[in-house]
Image (cartoon, rainbow, N blue to C red; front, side, top):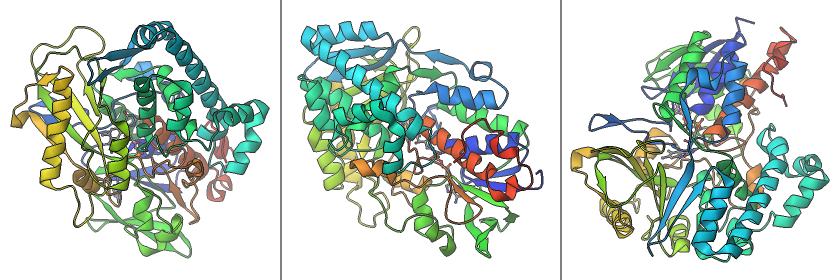
Length: 512
Ligand SMILES: Cc1cc2nc3c(=O)[nH]c(=O)nc-3n(C[C@H](O)[C@H](O)[C@H](O)COP(=O)(O)OP(=O)(O)OC[C@H]3O[C@@H](n4cnc5c(N)ncnc54)[C@H](O)[C@@H]3O)c2cc1C
């Protein structure tokens, strides 16, 4: 089996997990990555000398990584420092109110009762129970499954699962469904925001996305060294099991001959033979012919709606006026306008919600002096348009309103120019080709969209797909699961099972 050569294109979360899974099972793995470091969207630029996590910051679904590390013969605790956060997130509204959600359910219940009254707290408890049921119904037949169809899923759900989904009305939007759960508009807004975790509008996302609330209520961890430490660790583990990494070089073409994958061509002129390729870029790049015309047929021809992009500020500066926790959200009053402007108008929101990750907080004392922040607002994924509405003036205006909202809620950030690194949808579009800056693959809009993502197997023999634009979708743990799926599909391919019948099941996860 050692002679089977795999090239993984992209060292994002899914590419790293695929590389680790395949290397530990004895395949020859080479990872080719355009950036200078592993992680993809998990980036950690230095600002004013400080490394700042400037991609994902919320670590959830730790069971995914427990399983991946265990399969690699180690444990998450042995490899990384993880801290369970007592406060899941701190929420502020421009009217001066605020609410913390806690890892301890009773504390959350008490906090909601103080915030919105005893009746609303009872509704919150019912919402949590429903979100948990939705998550439990979908974890096996959807999240862990290879590439379920709507029909296949309904067959797998069982009577209880079907009853749960029927009760929430899967064709209902998340926003609509939350209106049945909450009377306090602030709580409806807070839980609607979970649709943005997969880059979608709560007005168009299906009610089933309430399962993301359950994912967070199940626990949020911080990683010592930042989320980037997780990406580096996965790369180290894969390397220790024989995978080779080439950073700073783009794959320009995936060569197909006789109907199957043969090689990858790199921007520096190298041709690497490949019996199989795992592609971890956005599948839009395949559709757009960026990896060669032959690859266009690897995914459905019709381009789906892009998910959200973001405008972010990575900051190293002192703050004043407000007790931040690690994860903070600043809400403005008119939530609908944000998604109308982004998805219908292709514009930056004039009244954005602002997320702030205060990376030196969450377990222990507040930092003295400058602290590390990632501030993020949602943005349209049109950073590749020739006449993008995201002009310098529009970007500056959005910055002004975002920082005004935080000031209105009491937070002052005293940053000088050299302490701020701004990243725009145009920047994300350059980093992640063919996306326009979309950070979560396709938008999950409409109940059928959850079944529209391609699975790990592509129609081109030898080509496997992995990443946030592939089932089960975006987010660090979901991308990790898709990396596992790609490795499992590859190990189950006839080319490998002919050689080693046991190889197909040695990964310890179900193969399609
Ligand atoms: C600002 C921001 C905040 C986020 N917040 C969260 C969060 O809190 N929690 C969460 O779970 N998720 C969050 N996400 C989403 C999460 O980061 C992604 O869903 C996940 O990391 C995507 O992983 P991936 O496997 O798709 O790879 P990606 O991260 O998309 O990486 C793909 C890699 O492939 C490389 N590549 C592509 N094409 C080529 C080529 N032709 N040649 C060589 N290399 C190539 C790219 O350079 C890149 O490194 C956030 C994302 C961003 C950007």
